[in-house]
Image 1 (cartoon, rainbow, N blue to C red):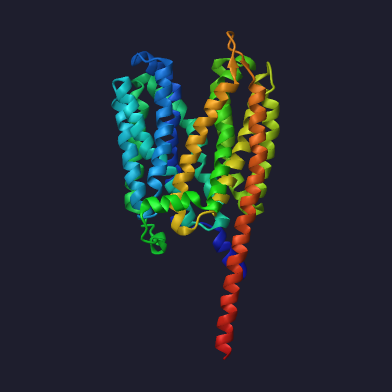
Image 2: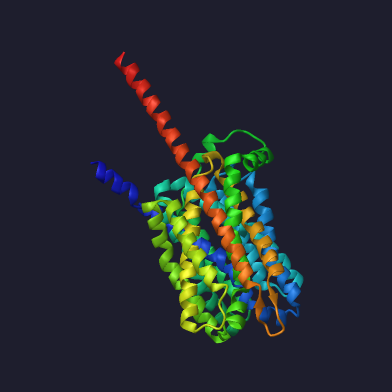
Length: 430
């Protein structure tokens, strides 16, 4: 009987499978909207007559507006049914993406990206709060593994499709495609997603800004915010210069870049669910350490490479993304256990903002470290690798502290429940 119950707890119900699928597709639309802009840069600069600097503002406008909106929404995030707040921000995201799809000038597109960021930047945090509400901690690794496949899927399928559409029907078409897919996703959310409002029963009638301040100043939550800031460092430092380093330092032609991205994306798609399943089986912190060690070793090698054969570049990138995917999925699953039920929405919103802002700062710092010569070769990329490696080592220590904190909290809850049970037994005996 005990075995059967355990198996039931380990398997997903049909409704939970729907939740995972709809959140994964929703994440796909959000990430694709963010990622598809960079490959469209050449067309946008030509057709809208904008400079590289202006295009940089178009790209960064999303990140900064997303970070700001996450902080503004944090105080209100736990005051509403999560289904309603998800729909509100998703409708806003669809509207912002539609504006991108009809933009005719630089300023129009800039405003459209700000609108999209204001709404789209909060959606991931709401999704994580929903996952935390509806899935036990021992299942969240697998859930995160499937939901975060959206990043790899957008890399393998979304970006090539977006470029194909842009080449045949203009740069507006990828955004309009995202709008169409998002409307279908929104309809399914309205029709199939049940209200998610159990957290409202634990809410105190406090001012949203007081709720925000209490969340930000909570000592346990600050540990999570610090960890997510360092987690964002690696990707945002290395990725902006990845293609330039591959072409100019490693001697890979531009024509072979899609192959590298596709192979690494496929590896991420496969490794994501496996990493999530393993993190539930062997422990989320252990999986995080394994992924971090893989990343640490590969980054130390990768950032010091010169002219390299294509097959080795593909292999190194694939292994690196497996490591990064493993650490991000296990860390995300572990950190869902940090906030109390009545603070989950606020915590996730702030965490999302911290991730966006720290990512922007990391990119800026990387730009100060890396120098590009007249021939295109990047200098100091090895130094950038050492900075990322140091961040990985510090994050391993920080995640250990968080893991111990969560385990101690679980033991305290079990002890309290045992005391209550014993007291009830004693009263029954009398």
